[in-house]
Every structure is written in structure tokens, then in C-alpha cells.
Amino acid sequence: MGALVYYVSAVPCSAAGDFGVDEYAPLLLRLHESGPARGGPISFTIRRFYLQARKPIDVHHREE
Image (cartoon, rainbow, N blue to C red):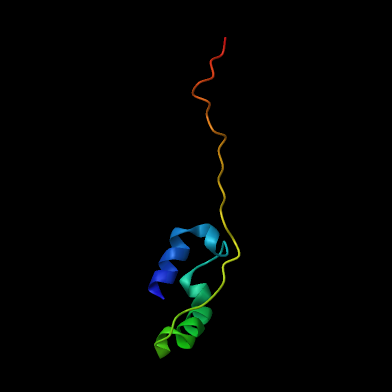
């Protein structure tokens, strides 16, 4: 659970803007009890992604 909290804190766009351990303690506890506390994994789906694109630079083009 510590790794999940660290990730969400380090990558703010991966969670709600108001994320904090105190506010989400009940949910974090339920996640822990449903997986790691029983020796299992945490499983969830992330439906967000970040896409960055850049136009290629033409190194052979010269402005006259």
C-alpha cells in the first residue's frame, strides 16, 4: 500500500485532486484487506493516459 500511496502522491494526475491518506484511509484499508493482507495482489484498472507528441524537426530544411 505504501508504494501505491507514493505513486499517487508522485504522479498527481493519477488520482483525484484531493488525494490524501487521511481522506482515503477507509478505501486504502479496504484495498489492503482485499489483497495484500491475504497475500494477494491489488488489482484495478487505470483509464487515464498521458500522450505527448512533437512535430519532427527537418534538419535538412533551410530558410532562405
